[in-house]
Image 1 (cartoon, each protein chain N blue to C red):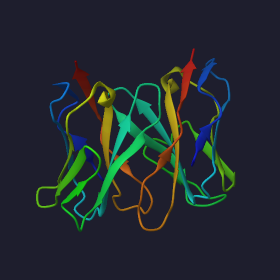
Image 2: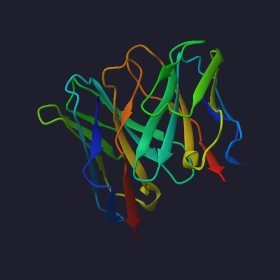
Image 3: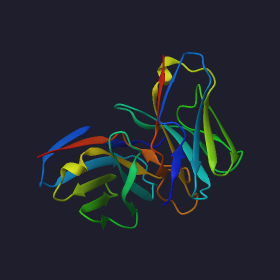
Length: 112
Length: 113
């Protein structure tokens, strides 16, 4: 089956620094990828998505990069703030329509 | 504002009890999902549904069942709760066509004693 993984379970950064969270996926047929943010005690919330016909997409302070050659996805957060502290999940569509396959998550901690 | 609502944020049940977790979405989505979230294991799919009265097993369906009698409502049922079902349960909904994000509820934290 599909497998989505993250390289590091935890990441600590200083406030104001840029953060990079990585994710590897196994299904080369996946055509949609998404990043979620989950704050403590809440459900996951959409951050940004990207389709396989793109290699980069930018949002407000966030950028997602997709490298289909090595099946790698990353989330970049510019000028990280304490409010960015959360668990970040990557997900891909895989082979089952409508279903998302999730990675295990990276806990981002931002220090003042 | 789109919404997925889970009926209970916190539940405490005893081993062997029957447990119902209810989820309602107001976005007219075809797909609904139940995930379980445990530390270090991420989100694992229990069951999902593409339409009313339809259900599909996810990766960890054992010990669970589901019901979808109406499009907006998807229930997760633990017929006989066990301590290893203590977890955070997340409901989500989304559209079938075109790929796209899932919208999540706030979660239901279940403790089985």
